[in-house]
Amino acid sequence: MPKIVYDGSLDPRTFKEVIGQTIINLLESDPDVVYVDADLMSTIGTYQYHQKHPDRAINMGISEANMMGVAGGLAASGFKPIAHTFGPFASRRCYDQVFLSAGYAGNDITVIGTDPGVCAAFNGGTHMPFEDVALYRAIPTATILDITDTVMFENLLPQLIERAGVKYIRVGRKQNAKVYAEGSTFEVGKAIRLREGKDLTIVACGIMVHEAMQAAKELSEQGIEVEVLDMFTIKPLDVDSLVTSAKKTGAVLVAENHNKIGGLYAAVCEALAYHHPTPVACVAVDDEFGEVGPQDYLQQRFGLTKEHIVQVAHHLL
Amino acid sequence: MTKDIGALKKLATQIRLGAVEAIQARGFGHIGGSLSVADTLAVLYGAILRVDPKNPAWPERDKMVCSKGHAGPAIYAALGLKGYFPYEEILTLNQPGTKFPSHCDRKKTPGVDMTTGSLGQGTSLAVGMALGDRLKGRDSRMYLIVGDGELNEGQPWEAFMFAAAQKLDNLTVFIDWNKKQLDGFVADINHPRSFAAKMEAFGFHTQEVNGNCVEAVLDAVLACEHVKGKPHAIVLDTIKGAGVKEVEETFSNHSMAPKPEVIARWAQGLRDEIKAMEGGAFDA
Image 1: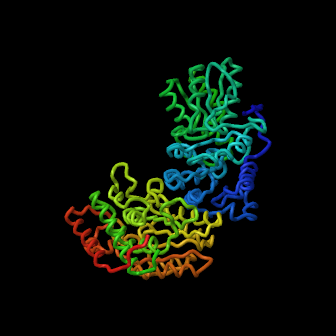
Image 2 (image 1 turned 90 degrees about the horizontal axis):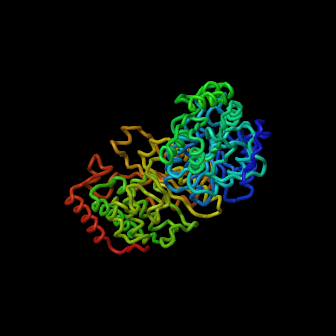
Image 3 (image 1 turned 30 degrees about the horizontal axis):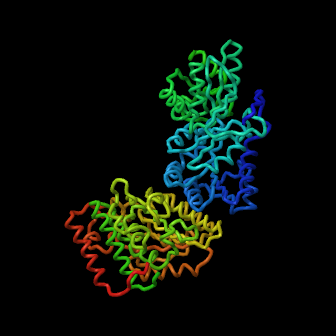
């Protein structure tokens, strides 16, 4: 079970150290795990392990299409491959290979795409994926996670590698807010209610969970009681939790670090349109390309802050 | 298994006949590139591959990935002759619900080791499988067939560079240099210059042989066993449509929809050839 310890403070650990160590722990504990990377090992702290074990932690070079195909072949040989690169190169660059060589061909692989959306910060527009979720959602039976904090990552990666199909994790490398206590466990496809309310549901994932909680606090001071769902699994979507909350509050606001087209907002709209038509609004990237800058600037620039959530909430209500 | 050249020639002709019969049953199909690789498939399935048709998923088996997945009809013929399924089933090629789609599909066809058809992608998959076998400590070998037109794609070159860097000597890549791709001659579209020189430069043990001669292909495959520490490339100098004269002489022979009486004549010609071949019965 997830134990919520959110108080707005930063996670004491960076994702960078936890991603690398979690991968290494899996390599050490399970001989069927193999890890491939497109020359970005140093960015998640796995390079030293690779130097000692180049056959288990394999640097593919800068060749993402080949990496996804090789990962598919390793899966066919009986391995549980984990592939890592930055988000745009883990999605756009190798989409056909993930779709066909892994998905269609029935080769189960786990893909980690780091620095989602504005987390790409100083790498700028070329490295800023606002569409990775949209692409992966269109792969039949794919699983997609947008990670909230380090505790969640280290609990979910071991689960994902055992899961069938294509699995995609988008996760930053710096720190998000700390939300969950050490030892929390998570279930793929099961949203977490971080806060109860009766007037509005905010559905958030990734870096936007913190913004949603801050906005909920501010709205509460204004007499609006907000329910917050951490929808860390974008696919398969937890339709039950969504619909239950929407029935209670009658209005849903989705907050995501992604284009408003094809991501969590789209998934929520599709589900509610069918199961329980409800007014929905979003705080998401308004169909734009990325740009360079510090993450806090980019959150302002693309409208991904608690202030934007408060504003859109008022408009929605 | 046989190293009898007569038997392998007969098997190659039987594979050609199977591909033609499957395409005849559906009325159209990828005939040119199916016929050009028939001799290589005969060598692999007749003399080389360590496989068990009753246990297609046997992990220790040798593997064969045809990245030019449109050669499906020839592969299905080879697998049917080898006993993976009743041979007549290949006549359901591309019928609704068939186990035999245009392009190879590991989830549908017993004996097909990997799903291919989106050109280029089979290369990385085969390299990953060869690497996986080595990591698992298996002594299995991987045989990968790629098309010459397919090498317009970038992905195979990524895969080749990686395979050589990993010293994957359990991998043999056949390049079916049949000179033509869908719209015309490979040399007129993106002239590849020398495939052999390219593969050599990529770090492969490289040979170039007459790919429509089972003896030459067999010798080249056997020669690979003596070279360690690098992957192997065999450039197959072939004719698109090899073995059916009218297909060889048709300019646009990638996919054809011949008149029923025409393809019936091709099939009969192949049957007559098989009948004329003395001895060397295929020992599955």
